[in-house]
Length: 99
Image 1 (cartoon, rainbow, N blue to C red):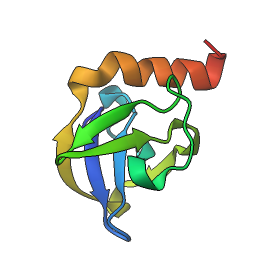
Image 2: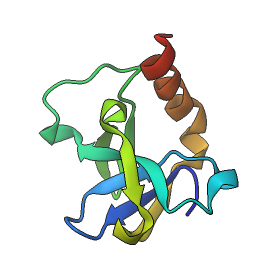
Image 3: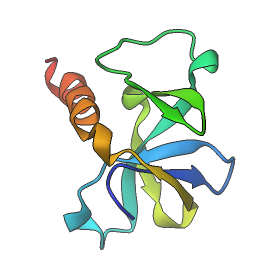
Image 4: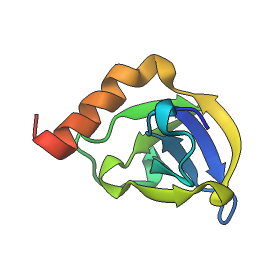
């Protein structure tokens, strides 16, 4: 698993981004947050919920809905959002520290 990589969940096909440090790859789970189609997310806070284009469609990162996901539930990789690392990290900082 790779930090800032978007994966498709095996159970329901939901897209989620890996937020966990690669240093901790031996753990049996990864901290991940779901990505929703912008058209399906009724509200968002720009700093908390950055938007990304994935497969030609706008997606919103639901940072506040992150959870530990067992490795066995994580499916195929879709796209890397490593180039968006600063915005994703800022969303995590906002969630945990309020700035």
